[in-house]
Amino acid sequence: MSNFLRRNTHRSASLLAEIDCRINEGLIRRPDLSILLSGRLKGLDRKRVPLSFSPDIAVEVLSPSKNVVEVHRKALEYLAVGSQEVWQLDHENGEVFVQTHDGIRLLSGMDAVLDTPLLPGFSAPLAKLLAGF
Image (cartoon, rainbow, N blue to C red; front, side, top):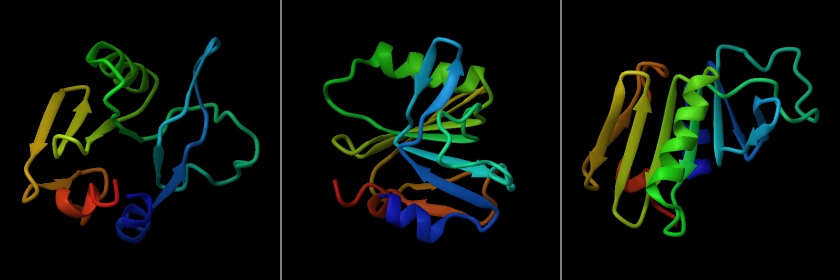
């Protein structure tokens, strides 16, 4: 999945895998993938972690061992500190949940396509996005 996103993510975005992000003083989260828009990495030492901010798009791969309350709470934490979208990829059910401040959008079925206004021109068929699990 990360290789697919790296090849297909908009040029004005940076993609980082499993990097710690400070949510608040006592809480650090590590999204499976972090998408940062418009040069947010400029002047930032990537070796210095955790990042002091949340990614613009946090991508989480759901596992059967996580309960729905924990998954939802984590998405709300990202959104509360600056993330604009949280993508939750559920390979087992062939679904992607896109959570924003406005609500949750469910993409279902391998013919569905993930796109976002945050990455103009980006679109990813779920079949390719979820491949490799």
